[in-house]
Structures are given as C-alpha cells and as structure tokens.
Length: 186
View (cartoon, rainbow, N blue to C red):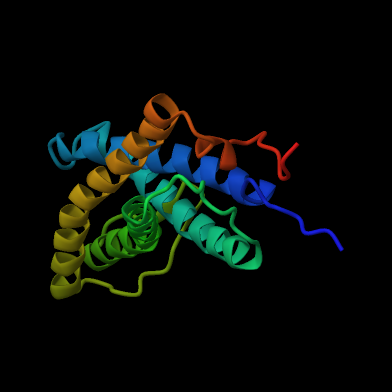
C-alpha cells in the first residue's frame, strides 16, 4: 500500500484562495479609499456599493472555502518550520478566516440598521434584519471600522510572510498554494 504525500493544497481550495485574495484586496482598497472621501459624495456612494457586494461575495466564498478546507487534507509544512513559525502562521490564518466572516457581518449590521443600500452589484437588495436600529448601526460601524486595522495587519503579515518564504527562506511554502502546484512530489 502506498501512502500519498500531499505537497500542496487541493486545487479547488487554491482557486478559492486566489479568488478570495483578489476580492479581499479589492474590497480593502475600496473601503480604505471610501473612508477618505466625504460621506454622500460620488464616487464614494457607488464604490461603497461595490465594496459591500464584494464583502457579501467574500462571506459566501469563505463558507465555501471552509467547507472545502474541512473536506480536504492540508499539506504538511516544511520540516524547517520552527514551532514559533508554525504557531504564527496558524494564528494569522485563523485571524484571516475570522475576518472573512466578521467584516461582512459588521458591514451588514451597519448598512442594514442605518438604512443604507443593501443592493448586490445593482441587481437585488438583501433583506434588512436590523431596520433603523441605532444601537446595532453604531455597533456595526464601530466594529467594522476598528476591525479594518486588524485586516490591514493580518493581510500585511500574510504577504510579508509569503515574501519571507520566497525571498529569504527560498522554500516551497508559496508553491503549496500556487495555482499550478503539483499535488504529489516528483
């Protein structure tokens, strides 16, 4: 009996990862830009529609990602990883997963309770579960705004760690998630 050694993540999970990364960075940059613009102005209003739609898309993509991740095996990290690197990587990954769920929820709370648009890419509107509730609106706004700093930190750490593995360590860490990575060693 042969044992298959997995050297990279499942192909579907890799595709979801890169789709998430692109949408996440777009939503993050749009949110940052809109935060610098005066409320109620154009193009802030229109960009916030895109930002919110991306957030909802990311929420559902995160659910799919978690389901695929739980159904597939993860490749073992390189043996050169110290226990501290393994712990730091695990913490950052869990922070990113949490962000993918919490940010859309707090954004929805803020928009729903504040009476703001809930249109999904100008096609249909999501139902309002918190219609005109100042407490929920304020909680959503404060949480979404405060957590944005955690987003910037977690994404920066994730990108910095990836660059560290590629440039300094020159190991196969990125290849495990790269779209065309091999599933088995050659």
